[in-house]
Image 1 (spheres, rainbow, N blue to C red):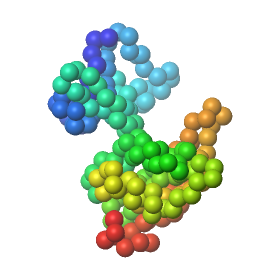
Image 2 (image 1 turned 90 degrees about the vertical axis):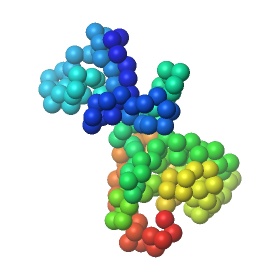
Image 3 (image 1 turned 45 degrees about the horizontal axis):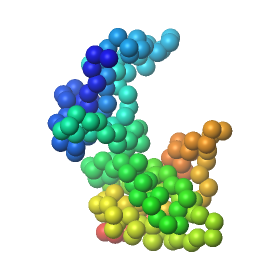
Image 4 (image 1 turned 30 degrees about the vertical axis):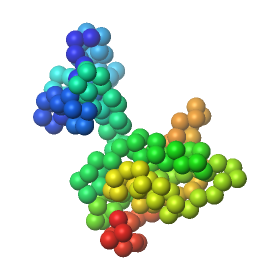
Length: 186
């Protein structure tokens, strides 16, 4: 492979190796596919700037390692802050009552979107929305904690993958959180 890098997808400049600055994982070389079969538009989008855009977001470390953080389509942008759903899901999974969790963006008139967690509890365990929110607030910056928690079984594909697009539709159908709750709490 000729190149593997993490770049700012707008400027196409490499991000610094500071383990903090997030960019998109991109690569190029003779082992990279030449394009999508009979889909010129998807090929053009994937290869803008001469690099194959994976859709994965990550950071570079000073030792050369790359750490994957999330999928670009799953990042929640709330009040100008990027929130990694993977990072938030990891914290929710660490709650002793939680067996499954998935986080998506919920529309919000004030913030743009806010984290909405769909959580399945372990059999015989109980937890409240406020308990899950406070649990996350103790472990993450406050803006990253979910503002909504829905307790339910998570929709899955036949192979067991969580169907986030269904959860995104459910979160969208809930409407704007700012209309429903006082934004000073957020």
